[in-house]
Image (cartoon, rainbow, N blue to C red):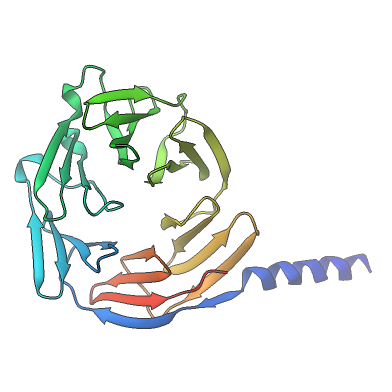
Amino acid sequence: MKNLIIVFFLALSSAAYSQKLFASKINQVTIDADQFLGYDQFGYYYTVKNNVFSKIKDNETLEYKNISLGKITKVDLLNPLKIVLFYENFNTVILLDNQLNETQKINFSENIIPILVNAIGIASQNQLWVYNSLNQQIGLYDYLKNDYKIISTSFPESIKYYQSNFNAFYWIDDKNNWFSCDIFGKITKKGKISDFDSIEIINDYQFIISKNSILTIEDIVKNQKFEIEILEKTFKKFNYKDQILSIFTSEGITNYKITIP
């Protein structure tokens, strides 16, 4: 009887894990790019090709390049009117307007307080999230006042992945622990994430991970996992925004509509 109960609960666990979430294909866009970065709310999509940052919609293409700063490490598209380009090798950030005109250049090596940036993103109130690897702390940099303040305690593990919005900085450490930090410096441990090749955090409790080209959406509050069914067997990158899942392959972008439970 005991063995039957164990088998029953194992079957329930397996059934829960094997739940499927079917994605409905919307369209496909042919692009020539090394990286697909995502869409904005105005229908433009963003790419990087040969280290040139591009903004594209229909027959309109805008470009920005800065050869002197080397490779683009990170692009933050959260505010399409204030795009953040991070050049890690030169410890520098470039801010662009919606026409990809350079509005500000910030060299953190010239800051009064030494800052070696490993992670960055746009925050609220004219600020940037900054992770300073010199002290392993998160700070906020006011790009209008050129003022930097440390808001968090230091943490020992290295950052494996990070993502941010206006009010929170999320990161996953080398042990796959998921944390968040708010603009007041409060750090919260969200939980532990299973191994992944790539990940995108949706909100405080949901994320999508890719492992061996299998996409899974997980909810840590409801303790649910759904495997997302798409047509592509392999892909370079995925992007999720406003119930649209975009899959980037060597042939272009395929957009799917998904409804997250």
